[in-house]
Image (cartoon, rainbow, N blue to C red):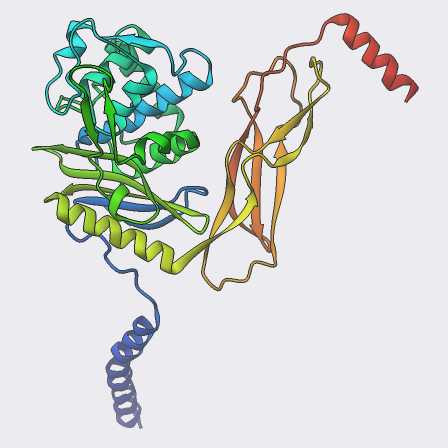
Length: 391
């Protein structure tokens, strides 16, 4: 009796052991796998530019030399300085001897030469001008060192854990590194300034056009000419970093960001980014929550010069969906900080926009004050209290 039981147990175990790999293999066969979209890159990421949803990634948090895609942060600080009124596009920017001495890619600024902020932006975005980057750093912060401190501070604000800058242009330097993920986040933030693609998406233009020596600019990112919908953002190359690119393209209201680092050559770099774009536009769509300029609601401000602050979408808010995904149960809620007291500065975080599908949270967006609100004087507060009393 015992022998019979042991024999049956042994046979059952052998059958189970034989069937298990087949069952596991069958299960694996039914699970769709993500293709390797950037096999030659040391590091890569593909991200929805609106929601920040990651579609594909490969070693995306590895610390690597970023070369000239460093200039994404440089351009971000320039655009923020423009928004804050610290500089204007028409401002003249002088070139110091130090800025003019930069090697590598440049627009060949002479010491003492002046260009407008608009022209410097073209030189940075299209020609990857190391000299123009340093000239703008000195214009905004006084010295490149002070500007680099601002770059690192902004990186911390964006939650970038694998980034540290040592200069404003990406020339090889100790302790200068970033990651594909962090660069994608910087790129997402830069694209909130929609006018940046006027520079990064231009294929050719001139500097010093009316001078005796006009300088022809050709965008180092050839995808803006050869890939439909591509309009940025920044290329990079050094012997250490190899070929890098943070690219963006938009089709049918879907904008994506593709970052590759450590590619062996420009042909492979552009081919793999194009493949990432093709995959995105074939597989995904976005569901708009708010378009740029849409009203998102009114927020009460305690003791403010205005009693209520209208919240307007500074950029598009949308969520990424696989094509064919039902969207009828997608909803959103605006969660504002419980008590907002004046004074409030422009850009101050005041709450979150939370998007749900059913009961599942799809994504959360930070909501910022669009304009400053000063504290109201005592007379205005008194009149407002009287109005409230009688209404």
